[in-house]
Every structure is written in C-alpha cells, then in structure tokens.
Amino acid sequence: MAKILITGTAGFIGFHLAKRLLERGDQVIGLDSINDYYDIRVKHGRLDQTGIDIKDVHYGKLVQSSKYPAYRFIQLKLEDAENLNKLFASEQFDRVINLAAQAGVRYSLENPQAYIDSNIVGFVNVLEASRHNKVGHLSYASSSSVYGLNETMPFSIHHNVDHPISLYAASKKSNELMAHTYSHLFNLPTTGLRFFTVYGSWGRPDMALFLFTKAILEGKPINIFNNGEMSRDFTYVDDIVEGVIRVNDNPPKGNKEWSGKNPDPGTAKAPYTVYNIGNNSPVKLMDFVSTIEKCLGIEAKKNFMPMQAGDVAATYADVQDLIDNLGYKPETSLEFGVGEFVKWYRSFYSV
Image (cartoon, rainbow, N blue to C red; front, side, top):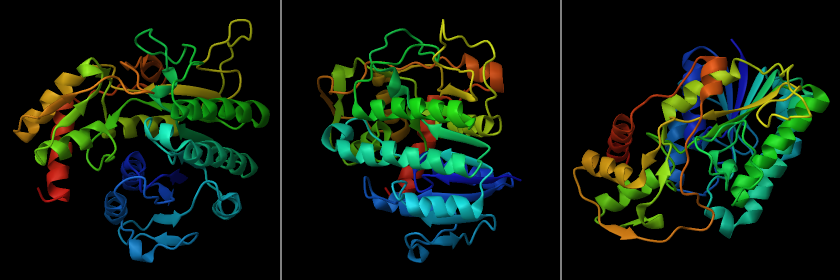
C-alpha cells in the first residue's frame, strides 16, 4: 500500500483517480483549492462522492473521509509554499500525482495571471517539496495542447513541441522543462502526462461535451468553431485513470541510449519521461455532435463560427510508448463514453 498525494481531487480526473486508488487499497491524501473557475456544485458533488462534506472543509486542515478510511482531504493552493511544505514534511508521500492546475485554453486569453500562479509557481512548489522530501515518483498533468503548431500526425512524444499557441499550452510545456531539470539535478523521477480531450461522467462544465449537452437540453444553439472542420482524440476518463495508475506504478529510470547529439524530446538520461494518454482515434467534431444528439434523442441547433484563437484544428495521440513500456492502450468507444456522461448529467441536474 502506497501513500499517495493527488492534487486536484475536487477536479474531474483527480476525483476519478482518487476513487480508483482507494478502491485498490492505497492510502490517499487529496488536495484542491476548490476555486470557482466553473460550477462549484460539481466540485462539491465530487467531494461528496468521496466522503468529504464541504461543511467540514477549512483551508489548510486535513479532513477525514466518511466513506474511505484511507482517504483524507485538504483545501490548499499550490501557490501556498509554506503550507504545502508542511504537508509534505508531515506526511512523507511515496508518490505524488499533480493534476491541480488552471485549465482551459480560451480562459488563458482572458486571465493569464491565473496560469502563472497555479501552473508555474504552484508547480515549482510541488517540485521543491517533492525533492526535499524524497518523493519516489512525481507524475503530473501535461496536455496535448503542447503540440501547438505541429501538424505531423499522430502526435508523438518524440516530436519537437517548441511552438505552443496558448499560454495554457506554454505553461504545460514549461512544467515538462522544469520537471526535467529536477530529474537531472536531483534525481527526482518525473513523468509528464499529455492528456487528450478527456470526457466522461462528472466532466468539466467548460468543455465541449458539457456545454453542448446543456445547450441542447435547454433548446439553445451550440457554437461549432472552425465551421465544424475540427477533430479531437476524445479519451474516456476511465482510460485516462488506468494510464495514470500504470505510469504512477512505474517510475522512469532514464534512457541509457539518450544522446545530446541527437536529443530525444520524450526521454532523457535522467529519470524523466512523458507519455501521451489518448484514444489514438480522432473523431470529427460533427460526428461528436451527432453522437451527443443520438444519446439525448434531440437534434442540436447549430451556430457555425470561425476558429478561435489558441485552438488547434486536430489532435491525434501516438500511444506506442504507452503500449511498449506499460502494456496499455485506451480503447473505450465514444458512443459508450458519451452515453455515460449523458446519464450522469441527467441525474445530477435532474433533467
């Protein structure tokens, strides 16, 4: 049984991951700032599902779960280095999985400082606390958005990713660079997780599946950007969680074949690596909309719009390294995943 810190457990992926690790017998401490970036009721609902009553939550104090004896939760900002360091020193984690971040490409155009505070300052605080407290492996959320202007499909971890087109993407690329530095200097094993368009029950209200479902049920038009000429490698949340667990259980040891004369961006001599976690099966946006319409039994009113700043036209994950090193490939079908989300949405909002 490992003692694992998961940051972002009031968030979408962190909530599902905490449940899975607790169910397999790990000891987990969850951390989240519980900010109001989106509908706070969803965050409170996720906490409640893991036995954390929001009335018991006070900043900087550990709360015991009423459902899982091996689960405790703390409300904390990653930017709060003093209290974060106290938590690491007192708990002495075996593993850390950092999923807390300011998310969203479009929001980064409006509020860039939020990304610097959480994704840059917060992440270096996690790195510092991990190295000073001898954490055995730090896994952290990166993003498919780091591929930016790269048009070579499918996206591979061995491709160069030096041309991000949003501050969100730049912050995630920065996390990978910072992690490599700590792996090199302090021998801290780190693994970056490039997630590809995650969806599923308890999903984020700022993402397309949630926005489209809500609008269709309310009889409002949905905004379809780039006039529908988009595709995404939609990845079901349970597949993401399985990938994260396999990564967490297998710290990198370093690539002995790595050479500075022909540097591989995805590995290093140090105990550092990154993985794509995606479905390896891009879906056209209009097919995605059709799947939602089918699951709801309602045809959407569509408002076709130009491409938004910061967006990319397509994503497509090469997951060969995930297969070769960890024996895993996400495979959940879009029809199943969207159906599960729609069932959850109707239940949660009673519609």
